[in-house]
Image (cartoon, rainbow, N blue to C red; front, side, top):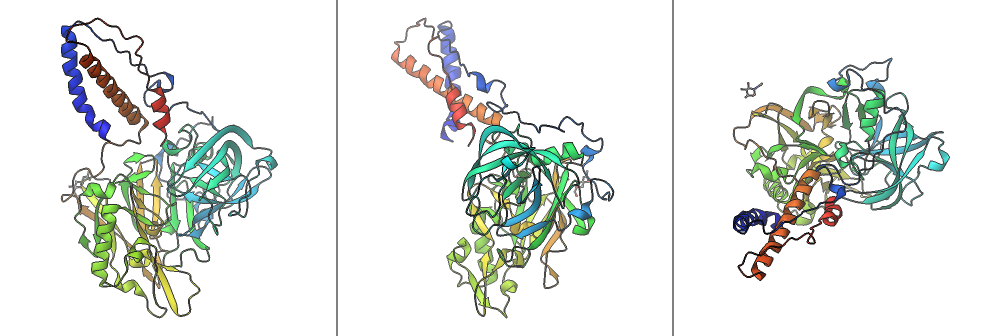
Length: 521
Ligand SMILES: *[C@@H]1O[C@H](CO)[C@@H](O)[C@H](O)[C@H]1NC(C)=O
């Protein structure tokens, strides 16, 4: 951002000016008035306070903050075994959970997305959804009358905020009042063939739209059901055709960890910042060979764990290094660049499995002990993905890795290898080997550690993060300041070098409009 970079220089000028101004005894008074929406720095403009109509006044359960709950409580609300296999789907079109919304209940399939924070369902018929929620048929629905738009890396929707009760046939017992956006209009959001009718955003309230004051589904659940602030996710599609029958299983365990869903140890990496599930990646290896990039490249401009993203997405620089390394290791030189960019499939005779031709891919994550790391590895069975085609003797595959301009995304391609624990209470994400990540009886994922972090920087995550509201406000304040200084300079240039007394009460600088206009990207 050029303007921001110019700021230090202009600040110096300001200091010089202040000196000059001192000589001329308080020449310029420059009231900078940032008017009301900006009031206390850090709070989003015009907050919309939305809480569920009832139940939210309950106090948190005494144990709720402790997080880890290893054993389920078969008689009570928490019965983890009842949640095993409560998901359906595939990596291509996502994993979804059945929910009953409203009174009387309307059954809908809801996509599980750890990369957003709104709960939204189709609210009107759409050619690409087989079912939708009709608020008019629900006696418990309350509209807030507030319009909301959410954009994803692919697709967007606009809807209206409201609240209603939900139950989960294979989730927690009981009904809960939650915020629901009913989608009235969407673009590239519901796609042909998807079997879900809504989205469950499980990330932090910082990402909730139109503002973080819209309590998220999981926060409502933690408060009302008094469950520990943790959930875990197992997606079982390894080695199965993407966008195939769409009936691969999976489990979303709300409130804890179900021991039958993993083997070996759980390795935890700290959550760097609570918006997405942002983690810190230290190193990448292809076939055991370190890519040797500056570790900040792996986190440019963030590394997140997102079940709502199909592929493993890599920042452009990292992506081209990975493709080069895979092409080199695989010894398959005749691959066209279209295979790597995802616009072409590679096909082999059905009797041949191409996986032995490809290397293992390892991602090193920082351990809770910051001088250690651990690595999660995916075998080619996870990233060279079979596609269901009407082919005779051929089986075709697609490349399960793509490039991104603004993030490294640990999406379904990688998550299908692991049982992933979103331990919000202890601000960490855990990975364990998932027993369903097997192809032909052999595991297709591995976790190993600990490793030393002596060979990497002590911090691979850029500290300047412009997604923070406070930083946006600060940056705009700084830019306004630059503007003022420029004005002063111009005035100084225009006025002959005499000390002129001049009060600029009329020259009120008001950057409110730019603040509001640019606040939400
Ligand atoms: C963290 O890891 C280092 C290196 O393995 C070890 O020497 C140190 O004792 C660990 N610290 C804690 C608090 O466990």
